[in-house]
Image (tube, rainbow, N blue to C red; front, side, top):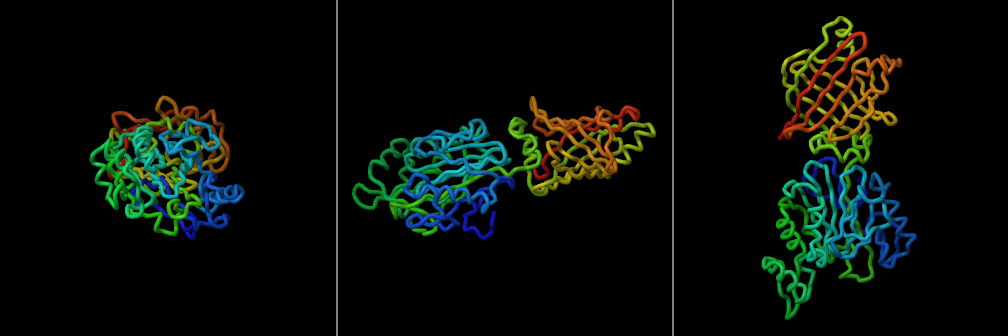
Length: 423
C-alpha cells in the first residue's frame, strides 16, 4: 500500500497473506463537494465519471491485485461468492466471500457497519455490509456460514460506522432487535420518549458471538463525529468509503489459479504463508547406491539416507520467489523457487527444474517439464521418474518426493510430514 495514502489499516492478528483496509473521504480522488474527494459510491448522486476515476485509481494507489468486486447493496443477506460467480457488474448482495488469491472484496458505507472476516489460516475471507436492517436480517450469521470454515477459526474486524453516542433510532428498531434477543436491550440507551441511542458495534458483537465467532476486533469509530468519513446522518448528501479485503497473491496460488482452492487446508496454509515461516516434522529418506546416482545426488544437494530423521523446513516467501531450506537432521538442502511462464522453476544446486503443477482429489502434484544443468537444457524425458506430491492425511501435511533417472536409477525417495512450528 502507498504509505502516504490516508487509509485505515485494521489492527487485528490476521494472517500475513490477508490484506485489508478502509478508505477515507480524503483518500486521493476527483469528486467535488459535497462528495469530496474519494467518493466510491455510484448511487449517491456524484458524477459517474468522477466515481469511475476514483475507483480506477485505487488499484494503483493501494497496490491492489485487481479491481474490487463492487456490490449493489440492498440491506439484505445475499452473499456473493467471488470464486464461483462470474465478475458480474455489481451483483445484488450485501456480503461477499472468496478463497482464491487476488479477489478484492469490498463494501461501501457511510454510517452502516462494515465487517471483515478471515480464517485464521488465511484460506478464506469475507466482508459484510451491516446496517441495522442487515444486522436484524442476519447478514453476519449468513456470511459466517458461507465462509465454509469452523466459526471458531474466524477472525472479524468491525470497521468505521456511526458510533453509539451519535446513532439515534426509534422504538420500532429497538423492539425489532429485543423481540429476537432480549440481550439486545443492552445495546440501546433511551434519550427521550420513543427514541434510543443504538450501539451497532455491540449488536454486531452479540451476533458474531452467537454465530460462534469469538475473536472480534475493531470498533470504536464514529463516522458521524469523525470528519475523515462520509456520514449520511450528518450530511445527507454525501459519498461512500470502502472497506476492502483480499488474499495476497502467492507463488503457488498464482500458478494453480482456481484449482488452489480445492487443496486441503494444511496444504493451502503452507503455500499461503507470507514472510518467513518454519515447519518441523519427520521424514524417511532412501538414496540410490550406484556411482552415477551418488554423483547426481551431490550435484543437487540431496539429503543422506535415513530410516527416519527429524526435518525442519524454513520457507522465506517474497512477492516474486521463495527460498526453501530443508534440514534433514544435520544436512541442509536449499532451493529457490519462482514462476517462469506457466511453470514452477526450482533451482537445486547446479540443476534448475521446470515443474507443471496440478491439483486433483486433494493432492498437489509436481511434474517435470524442463530441466537445465549449468544453464544447458537436458531432455525432459530423462526425468520422467521425478515426481513430487503434497497432501493432507490424519490432520497432517504430507509430502512424497521421488527422483529416478534412466541410467542412474533411483536417486532419492523421501516422504514424511510437517507441522507448523508454533502449533
